[in-house]
Amino acid sequence: HLFFSTHTLTSTQGSLQSVTSPTMRFTAATLLLAGTALATPLEERQSCPKVHVFGARETTVSQGYGSASTVVNLVLGACSGSTAEAIVYPACGGQSSCGSVSYASSATQGVAAVAKAVNAFNTKCPTTQLVLVGYSQGGQIMDDAFCGGGDTSEGITSTAIPIQAAAVTMIKAAIFMGDPRHIAGLSYNVGTCQASGFAPRPSGFQCPSASKIQSYCDAADPYCCNGSNAATHQGYGSEYGQAALTFIKSKITA
Image 1 (cartoon, rainbow, N blue to C red):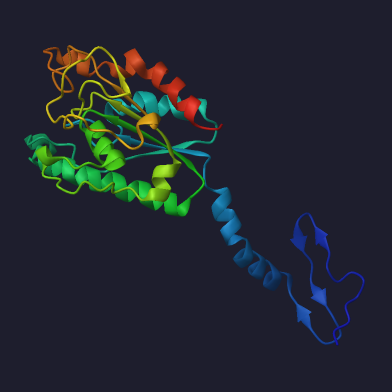
Image 2: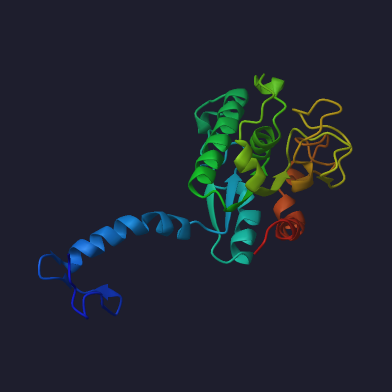
């Protein structure tokens, strides 16, 4: 039998004191070590943010968020304790400045990168609400990863959704700006474009997560639509950023 004194288990400013008995002694260090091991899962859960944003940049822009940064930063500013990460992918269209990676190869790598990043984060933090923000080619890769359906123009033949089902559930909002996959008539379209982008979805396409998406595209855009004003393509953050934030806030619980 072990008999402990009346002061066996005490705490001073959160530190454990020695536990003593006539036949056994535990040092505070031993208990603290054991406590650390037991607390690790809780600490990991506590380190998970309530909201996490993934941002994907446009073609030829160096690694980071590119023009997706406008909406990413709006979310970070509006949601206390939220975090963000940029999708790592070539963002290239054959230009030497980005390694001469073809657009198709870049997009294919990008779709895989989105799925990998989102799946990994969801596995680590399964209750964190997720937000996708993709600009131009960044919108295309997020569109493909989130909605599936394949992308034959880029050589993606599988129609499966590469993001795991649990993560799809936790993606509460997705913002696509200047997405080349744009076609007219989708429920989540925002803007003046009534035509198709240069890598359009097939006629009749429906995204299973349509209610979570806003896709911004105006008629003058030559990439998501059939216009001729490249400046329009770069202006969605300033034009629609606040609207995108309002939509995101309507989909997440603060």
